[in-house]
Image (tube, rainbow, N blue to C red; front, side, top):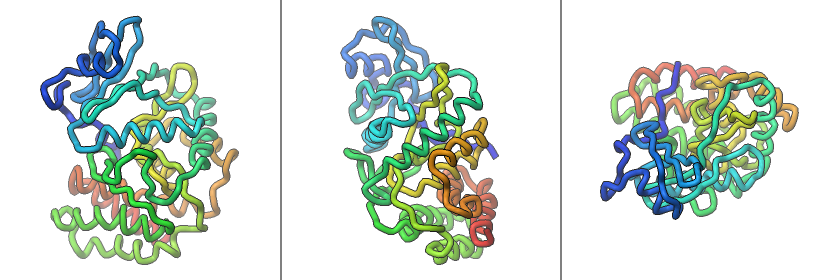
Length: 301
């Protein structure tokens, strides 16, 4: 099933005060703007004087820009996977370098897998830890996502990721209470289902194919993070959830750099539960059976 795009709210190129993306870029970078090209309702390609191309995103959700910018910088600080540089931001606007894209390749995929393993290995202070300077109340795409540090991954994942969205889905009538029991059983059994304990990894957090840009120079760039400290298998499960070019090569590169714990493929459904429940809440009943199937798979392996 294809993923609806989670990342960009639509504001027709303006946010608070009616400022345009081009005007925001000029103000935040200190450079004159010579051109603008809308990419989506909230994302604009802007040409700065001298020919530099940047991407300007508008967002009115409280803390959303700060969370995304903090995530981009935290991921970039690891010096592993390439991340577009942040050129300017305020409460409503984010300016980053434009990524010149090219076709995916197996060679780039293997390199990406190795770099992703190194990114995860750069670590985080705790499960649920936000990036430095990032807010506790962040987002995964359009959906609220709280980052409250915890020492234990199974209880943190159940309590701060899965159960809040399960309750929202049931309260909205998108999932029936009888259906929710299988997800609740997964949460109860998480300490047994989670596999060997691992240290907190530095996660992108929303690693679906739309946030993986295959650069024209042969290097992958990652955009639109929901960065936090988490379990490294979560990013890999998200890559698999909606498909990724050359995924087998990505995994080969990853395993070469940092082998995954035995049985990791049996835990894919467990790690997909959170994004699937987010989709149930955001986009409706169409994702309910997929979420329930992931829960059943997590229980049976």
